[in-house]
Structures are given as structure tokens and as C-alpha cells.
Amino acid sequence: SCGTDWDVVRKAICSGYFHNAAKLRGIGEYVNLRTKIPCHLHPTSALYGLGYTPDYIVYHEVMFTVKQYMQTVTAVDPYWLAELGQMFFTVRESGSDLHTKQRQEQEEQRQMDFQQKLRDDLERQARQEEQAALRGGGGKVLEVGARRAPGAAGRSRSLRDAAEDGPSAAPARGGRDDDSDSDGGAAKRRRRVGGAAAGAGG
Image (cartoon, rainbow, N blue to C red; front, side, top):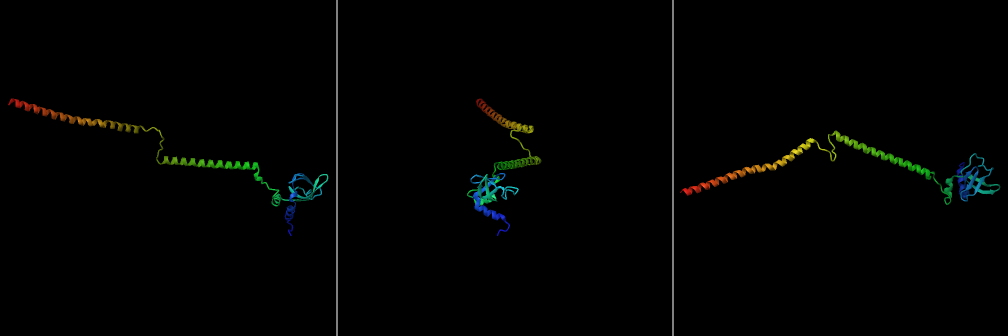
């Protein structure tokens, strides 16, 4: 019913003999995945003279002679073993290898460093453009603690002198008022003296 699709037939055989699965260990030599018992392909097997040896096989039985030879051997896909005998087998992906993981981490670190450098360059360029815009608009950025221009210092000194001279002018005006008051007092005294002399002559 499957036609020439032999994978269907091999998968059906694997479903019944997955407990006799073996993995290639050397030239024509396999080891049982469950019992770790070594076993060999018989020289009369079709897989022995195939030109290459499959990595995973299932067999019907082992015949003990000079060596432990397998009989009725069929090549299978390791994913079939993980699917049909999941209580015994699992597939380990190559991406979980330690070296592969380290390479991935190094690549991620390089990408992060590149992105950080790109952000720093963009921020530096933005600051330079802002400073150029301030210089072009006539603005001047003053630093804290910078020295003032000489003209500004002269103007502040003249304002300070004027503030000091202002209060001293007020007593001068007050002095003239005091002189007029003293002149009025002298005139009153003369009038009193003159009146007293007239009374004495009468």
C-alpha cells in the first residue's frame, strides 16, 4: 500500500524493535543504546557492503559466534526512536552544545557593544550641532567662575562710587539751613539789646 516509500516500512519496523536500537561506534561496529552491549554487522548483511554504514539501526536478534553479530538489521532515523520510544530516547540538538552557546553569547555581546557605540556617536553629534547653533545665533555660553570684561568692572565701580557720594551731599544742604537759623537768632538778640538800651535812656 505504501508503494516505493520504504521509509514507511522502516518506521513500522522501528516501532516494534526500538528496544534493540544501536548506534555506530566504529567500522561495522555498533553499541546497543540501552544495554551498551557491542554488536557487529555480519559480512553477509546488505548494509555491510552498502558503501557506508548508517548511524542508527535496529536489529531482530544477536547471534553469538566469534563476535556478536546482528541479524535482520534495518537503518532508522534517530527522530523515529525519539518519537516511538520516547520513554527511552531523546534527541539532543546541536545548538545546545557548549561551544555553540559560547559563540552565540560572543556574537550577542558584539552586537550590544556596536549598538552602544552607535548611541554614543549620535549623542555626541547632537551636542556638537547644539553648540554650533548657539555660536551661529550670537549666543555665548558663559562658564561658572569666568572673568568679567574690564568695561563691566569699570561701570560697577562708578556706580559704587556714586552710591557712596550720595549720602554726603545731604548734610551740605542742611548746613545752609543751620546758617540761616543762626543769623535769625543773632538779629533777635540785637533787637532785645536795642530795646533794653532804649528803656534805660528813657
